[in-house]
Image: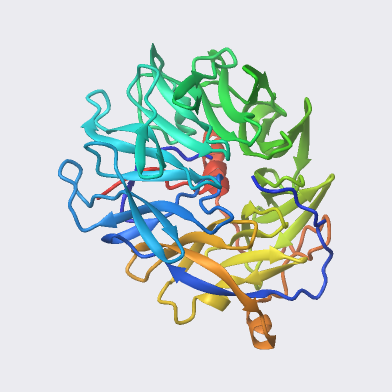
Length: 483
């Protein structure tokens, strides 16, 4: 991506009635690749945050370059976009701004994110950012708590918006760089915005908090410092995940360490993410429900991370194997299923799962996959030949199976794309798309073949490990400033 990142790397679907199937002979569908194009410039993209960037009507929110230069930042003016049924619509910018990137779209087509206002912060030299809401032709700035910046991360189907905003209280931590927030001398507090009113969520006792996810009941998942005492492992205060409801912030705790991150929230109030274990030597995926925090475990390696959960309680994530590589997994009712990889790739990553239990992700840097009916489908082999794209990174899958992602062209430019189901897969299509033999069987608890010669570099510190897990699990380009 030919751009710089300015904003954070963080982070529901309908009730599913399908249980995770066993390894049956699956009948997959053929997919059509649609290039959403740009507004005259080189790039367009959808953000890689956990909230889906495509709703169940197939409407996509993203950002696209125009051919107009940005006068104070360089590069191109890049407004938010909406794509629906082949029509790309410019959603505009905040007054004075050059760029905007949505982080979430709801069933009504309300789009939230943040954008610049054409001003550089004299304290940091970075563009000043404001949370925004776009709906029915309006662009609304959500404001701050008196500080400089704010960011909106998700909007639910009731139109409630969650995110974080700066106040005027001095604060040196800025979440220790875990979230890719703009550098800031003041504290961030999570907020919920509803019908024009921004409410401060408070904190768990420390200076900062951030609201990441909101379900249709108005429950909010996020993270907060619990004190102002730097931990030995990270050099900043303890961070715990929280669930906020009815004006009360509930500390979900950790698995024994001094850092925990919420990564997914469903309409049943279940929260997933990852937490350090005792001693901060590793992180494990967790699920929290009704006051109980459960360690999901790993596929035999040191670390794991839960990236999303659907309303049926199916958890998608990524886990280390004993050989130091990692595989995507699905966890359900205490059982972890290794999804394997495509054609012997050493690693895979699970990004998003829909209400039907269809999961998407990547297999190393060579393939992107759809996992359904107990098997992994190599979508790269099906849709890339002849498309003009070198690779596609999938971001989200809606409940009808439409996939949105970012397509990389041979020259390095990026275009937002949609993969749309387009009829049944015939025998030739099945032979191309069904990955096999996978390194791990689709059966429960398989660790796969660990005798691979390809290993990944181990992080050298707890902070590097956590940052790597944030990148691995959330893949967020954030709000980007043009070149």
